[in-house]
Length: 462
Image (cartoon, rainbow, N blue to C red; front, top):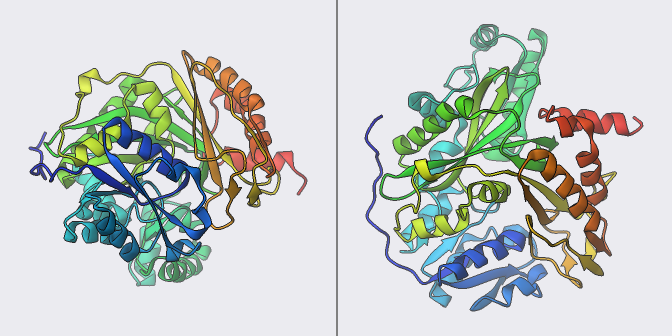
């Protein structure tokens, strides 16, 4: 193993954290700050001015109008709020500015601490071609395909596709979230797909750079959580299965991934840790893989806190958000790899404010709210009776997490917890989630990333 790189001096201490986000993750970060004895600053848009989760903060500042572009994505307004309140650090949560290298750089220039990885690591892993090159160097298994950008020459494009073997997938180098990609099954479809994806990438991500990989037919989506401090220490916290997706958006996640043995995943986890060392990574991050026929294929790294981090917390016993903040303070990891285990099984369901049949967002006021309680049941949310769900942001309003000794016991517990959840005044996807938990294929762990889309087609008339 090569020597760790990117070891840094401890950052200047801070006692106040500005949380540059909203909703359930803002409330979750605030809880972790309180556990560390830190004060918090909450920001909000006009749409969130009456949110009660801001009441516990030392400062609750409105920084702009309801549209995210004028508030939660406004870097200047966020930095001004930090200066006005004396915040020494900024936590971006997930989404919004969490994976913007320019935001991390601006925070650093302002003399503040960014609670996340260095801007250089964000930039490297945000460029899918550069990320793949770094992973290959570290020994992380990748999807078959070159680690270079797709050329403009039509003949070279044809040759690349033939060498990989159809079907192939064309992806935007700066893409993410399911955008900027096309599957090509036949040679005659190739050049039109490349042209369309180039234009889509240019408009969506500001870069027309593409790359090509083998398209896997029935893969599962497997994740490995890593945590790295400023002193060269890095650990991985087991694995998650996030295969239950609709339009590339995760719906149900679980840890550990069914059927993945420690012997199989171990070398991959260690390779992820080595990759973190090589790129000088710090903080928390997630390596995402496609898994098919007993093999793992790296697809991307998320350089931030994940929505589904609670299932790893429940099985590892580690407070990931608390560790993330402590690392930003310059503290070393509290546990070594040998002390990390995986106890029981955890499942998370994302509760969204949306119609359970059409999946259209549902805004409005929550009239009645009843959330389940009990051993092994956790709710991460910011909502309450009387809360107004805004049409301006993502529809996620709560995460329901359960933990039990076995996967089958966790499924039973989640079924009961979903049945006990009552949210009125708006539409939610609770019936959809209950139907997933009752599905035989899910119960057997026989799903892949296409399973839920196919399942939905069989449930509804065309």
